[in-house]
Length: 524
Image 1: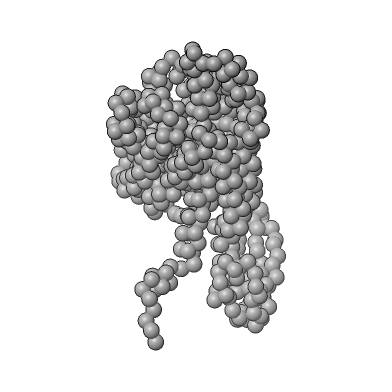
Image 2: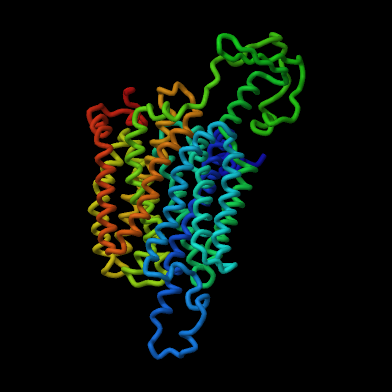
């Protein structure tokens, strides 16, 4: 008999649970990559929306009368971004999306706890694809109404809130706390990967047909929504299938309630073989077989059914308020870069929209490295707040350095983009993933995993308030010079650092503890 190939032997060493973990990790990574991929085009298209107007204004004075008398639709096909207040108008579009996202996020987590994650996420991705394409259709149908684009942004912001609580809940329930920082750091790179892909796709079409910069990402996220519906496996479904198999089905089941507790009773048929079912699909045919005659009635499960946590109940979890407010300012900085960096590069480095979009992806490359580094360090130290504080402390002077170095050509700009991306996105990534998962499975919840979606939504929803304010303030302040924008970003970093000081002091006073202990503080 021929020996088993080493590759096959390696694959066979993993059990079914490990395969489902890996599959869920990869699938949720791709799902949320498509969310960020569909958000990025607006930052790439901004410079093109105004460029169409400003370049025509700069025609030589000896231009022929025929050129100067062209109708408005030809002169400036994308009103109202041809005016001097175009930065404020572009900032308003950003604010519309992010404000809707912030408000919707608080509701999304509460709704998501009460609905199947797979269906909830699928509907959100399909509708997000629809509204992303709708924005691009403004180019196809030559629409110049600011209200149309703001409506598309608001609607898209609301439906995109289905994504984050759903994927964090799914991945958080599949992975324990042991190496959560590393796993979440690797997994959270989907944010930067999505931004990079979104920049490249939007940049490819921006100069020729900017409508496709939105339509193509819209189609991608819709297709990923269908894949989500077909393949996403929730941890609860797998655990239920496993527990039922261990009880040796087939069976008749009934529930009874005693003193507020629910008991599940299973009545077995002797010597009966298991038929095809969801359990067999999840666990395989080898996990089932012929039942051995046992007691006719067996109690399988006893305990109070966990209920969804309330909004105020989630706020009382130690650390939720501090990390939420910290994320408000950290996300303000990150999303200001997300929405305004390409336009800043076009002005500071005098590059066209495509080259500026390509160069801006280096910020996200640095974000991938920073997110992974933050996760590894916080796992090693067991101190999430301290890790975030160190990176925030280093980020502020780095932002000032970037504002100075970006004027000296592409070389220094590339280096500073990588460093800024790591230090800015590191704390943001850690708080929205590992910290949220730690708090959502805090010991005070007594194993109620259904709270994870609400806790994640509160933290990210509060952060999204900062994400809405950042681009809006950037639009207003940039009219007085880009230096004002960078001063605002540095101030936000210092405020985020101050909000973490209480948690940092607690961590530093405690002895070295296992991962996740940084947020397991005393009740208050």
